[in-house]
Every structure is written in C-alpha cells, then in structure tokens.
Length: 417
Length: 42
Image (tube, rainbow over all chains, first blue to last red):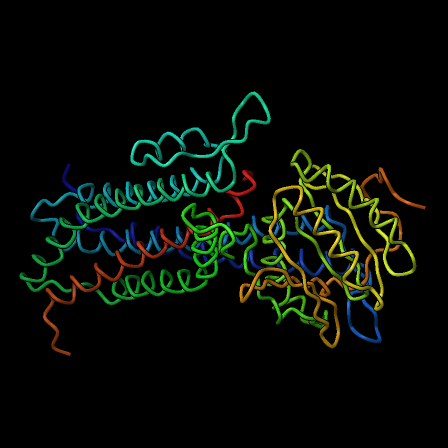
C-alpha cells in the first residue's frame, strides 16, 4: 500500500494526542493530590500544637488510600509510557515519510515496535494478575528449582517467595524476548533513517525533539522507579534458598531503614511524606505474615495474615499482652480484615522489652520469624529493631502518631475491656 | 552544526528506542513490585 502524498493530518493528530496525554497526566496528578489532601483532612486529625497526626487512619482507610494512590500513580506511569511511544511513532513516521518514495512501509517499522511495547505491558500484567500457574509453568520450563507451594487448601498456591522467584524467571525470559523483537524491529528503522540521510534528508526539528523527549521521559521514569528495582533485588536476596539459615539475609524481613520517617511533621504529608509512607505501608503489607507498627506512645500493632500459622499465635500474643497489663502494656485484637488480623499492644514510655521479647518469642515459635529484639528510643518515638548482628531492621510508624482510642472500624473479636 | 544527516537521523531513532526500552523496564518494575507478587493480589 502506497502512502498518500503528504498532508498535515498525521502531524496534527499526533500533536492532539500528545496534548491530550499531557493534559490527562496533569488531571491524574491533580486528582491524586486532591485525594491525599482529602484523606488527610477527613480521616486524620492534626494536633495544632505539634503538627503531628493525632488520630491515625484505620487500616482499611489506609489500604484504600494506598490502593487509590498506587492506582493513580500507575496510571500516570502508563500515560507517560504511552506518551513516549507516541513520540517514538512520530519519529519513525517522519523517517518513513522522508523515505516513502523508496517504498519502505510504515508497518515494517511500527509493527515490531508495537509488539515490543505489547510484550512489555503483557509482562507487567502477567505478574500483576493471578497467573500463578502460568508463572510456575514458565519457571519449570527453564529451571529445575522446585517451587514451594502451601498445601493449606486443596488448590496449591505458590508461596510468596516461590511467586517472586517464578516471576523473576518469567521476567528475564520476557525481557530477552522483548530485546530480541525490539532489535529486529529497529533494524529496518535504522536502515531507513540511514538511507534517508544518504539522500540528504534530515529529520525535522520537531521530530528530533520528540525523540529527545522520548529518551528523557524514559530516563526520568527509570530513575523514579529505582526504589522498586531495589526492592525486587532485596526480596530476591531474601528468598534465595542458598542463603544459609541464620544468615540475616534469609530472614523474611526486608531491611527497612526508614529513620528519616521519624516524627515527620504532618505538614509535609501532602508532598514528600505520603509517598514515603505509602512505600512503608507497602512494605508493611508485604510483611503481612507478621508486621507490626509502633506509634509515638508505644502502641504496637501486629499485623498477621489470617490463615497463616501465625493466626493462632496472635491469640496467644493477645493473651500475653493482657497478662502483662500492669500499666505497662496491654494488647487487644483490633479486628480482622480481609488480609490481616491486627493485634495492638499498647504501652507507654515505661514499656519494657520484656513483653515484647515474649511477643516475638511466640512469633518465633510459630515458625515464621527468626528475630531478636532490641529497643532503641529516638528523641521522639519508640522504635523496635530486630534482626541479627549487623542486619538490623527498623520500623517506625510514628508518622501516624497516637493510636485511635475509639473503637476500630472493623469488629473487635477479642477486645479486652 | 555539521552533523551528517545520516548520523543525525540514526542518533534520534536510537534515542527514541532507548527511551522506550527504559520505559518498559521501569513500567515492569513499577507494576510488578514484589509486594504485588508477595501477597498475590493485583
């Protein structure tokens, strides 16, 4: 099919698409900011004296906020990706137009690139959805390493680490495929660009800018997501079966260093704190097998996934907390949500490590953690560290400050009086 | 600037392609954060 002689239509359509994308991203960004501000305004009360949050969001509200935030940020990344793809298509179209007399079809250039893009997005979705069986099957095609499944139900489910490892295999394979398809697809584009140059045709200024914009957007997004890559590498290390038992790296605790989150004034929530907190929350959800939060006055909430062996331990821990209710600490079950059972252990400045040590002893006996505890008090908040040797992790939750004193939104099952 | 049109064209096509490659990588890392895989939820 021969292209029709030049008209301004493709350029105009492209320009409109670009403007639309930039506007759309702006709207997304504004909505995200609005949601954050609304959430803070409605769900959290701020102590005017200190500027800290005095009423924390419930787990549900936080999860909602996180889900919304993540969804919208994801949309923004996708929007920018589409933007860059359009830039690239524009560049290739310009090249093609310069060379159209030689009969180089646009399809020969664009189709492999579309395939490249589709493969990349498909890879993203593969891990995003519930394609566990597929992940496992792909993994077993190239690797003999067994994948651990949990046999709690009649349908075997991959254990979290197995899921991560299986996805890593799939990710590598798909990226290789994407690279191959992309390189093959780009050869004709390169040839066309080179040959057009031989005839003295020069890529126009606008198209040059589009190419540079595409590169810059790619670079910026790559830099912005470096924390995600870091997380992935860290989790892979944690999941490495060859790590020696007892080696701190084999512990299922990500090494969080969130010291900078200590008592961050709420004024910063709208800009910097929230993403950091969201990241932290992500990690906390990540640690759902047993995560806990410590607030300024020493509340310690344990998040346990129901159905895990630790659920039983949670009950023990609750009783333990009640037993040690001597003005130092008390625990209560905040309730069960779909994902977590929350046990909160309240304490004040006199809270000693003894109940906490017992706490974690129970956890350890439940078979899932290998943690030892030490206490460290910063100027403004309690924090609990765990880990071994130099591998000490810290979680600080005082950005959410004091615990809600009222009844939690989810039904309490074992709430002590 | 007296960059030959050939080089000029090729460099810009490469820049755009590199941009796409980085975006795909970033997007995958973003969407498939270990958390997603860990808890098995979208």
